[in-house]
Length: 382
Image (cartoon, rainbow, N blue to C red; front, side, top):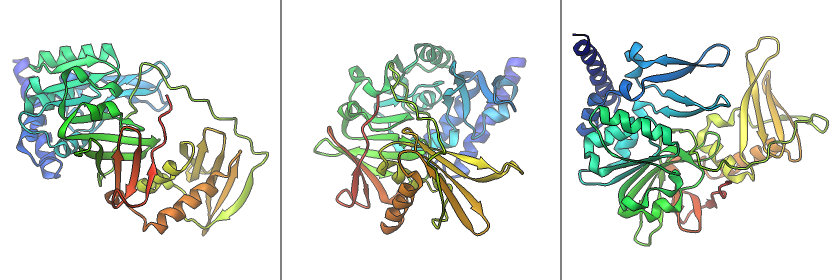
């Protein structure tokens, strides 16, 4: 009786979620509607984590809150020893949009980079069949857990614990490759494992929040080209067997700081995602960002930026103007101002005007057309 009631409860919620995703326009193909309604997300994510008021990550049992599980919410599923979230079950609405963009059809072979909990692999398996679905992730324990949970609910796609940048060549070529993690550049190994007329859907991020999903198709000369999606999305960065070696930033010093007014009128540049992407594309180093608080009210009062070489700036709103303080080896805000001027001169391109071309030796971001203004993606630091 309890088992029957429990099954009914999650199925009703899964069906409701599937219907919501159709109503919102995130799902248009009935195959994905049926998959979302059929896959028990709570069994693939038995435990999730959330931060308490002190910032500590606390576990919670998903079976105790099925309404939350079967909603468009990301579920954090793994925390590393440093207290950082390193794995998650992606928002179902975003996952549905990506599956629609991927346009995987019956008979297509699909490679997923970023197994995570196995939820997306289950959706793919439900729609395409186990034999057509392959998924990889870096963490053997995570892959083993996903394999066991998928088998328990009747799905047996091919899973492997490998570095996602290498793909899974022994089972290629693939008609579709989908990455549920972000990458600073599209690994050329993926292109080599892609079938003719194949599609890659990946989240390209050159810095924190600086980038977006891009849908690439294989051209006759073997290169990949395509446009960024109009709706922004973000994933956790792809992990590797060897962690990147990046020198830490120099200590912030205010000894050489200068203060001046700025007329840019855009303190939180990251809130204009296409501009933020281009700022970091044109910068020699990725830029981190944060919000500053008014010391009296503890309310947001401005923005802070910092590069790995110790260059930094703070922008504070005062009455009808903004004041910038910047220091370090480079005048960081001056560079951001210059990048914003360049962006405006290009007609303030949004995601619908930005595209990417990938070849074996070069990856370029372009505006409007591959022959238009273009800039190389920075080399990946490993």
